[in-house]
Length: 309
Ligand code: ASP
Image 1: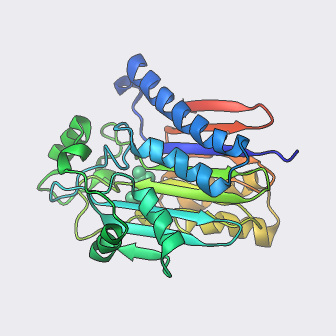
Image 2: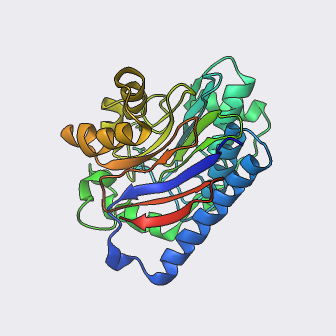
């Protein structure tokens, strides 16, 4: 039987160890485990990689611990604007949304853009109109409110900085979530969802919903979901860069993803990490920050749930 596997992340960054209590660490690990197992059981039951990554991301979006869906960070206006994308490595179909609010599961909307529209990427008002047409219910702002995110925002409110700028000062982890999977038929997929960066302005959009930057899947090479300083991940076209190293330079999944995270993105000033899978079920999870919430499980019996190096 072919190896099937899944990997998920809940963001990378400066996860200051002192701020992490044993209790909080257990909560993060439990949330990661739940999301991991949900996606893995889709695969174990013969489901597709697309359904598996969507399932895992929905669970991470529903947890207030991560910066996606419930628990999304605050914009400069004190609102939540979320971005998400999903890609099917078999068909190269993709769906993405950005600048959406009030939607409980942005990844479901991205999936519906892929499945029910002629388009790949819907933004802002248009994306919201599409959600209404597809009978999405709107959650009140209170659903997305999280004390910790609110405190993070109050520190930056009325300044020109957004979260990146105090990266070294405090716990400034990026809590974007993502999943990549390889199913029983060797088809791969990637999904990513985020609230973006705290105190972002002007309709700022990061790498997460951009196909090729924060999210990409192609059976020929790899499926990738990124987390980190979005501006740099966009400039580095990170997810597609990993695929290019595999396709054009013949690199392995692990060599290509390490080259991008530990060399190419660092050279242009980016920090963060990614999760990657290929159509043989190999997994790689490199990051150049202090930690990255991450987990992986494979039909060959390997399982890992970790935060720090
Ligand atoms: N990459 C995301 C963004 O720039 C942030 C994150 O990974 O948490 O929007």
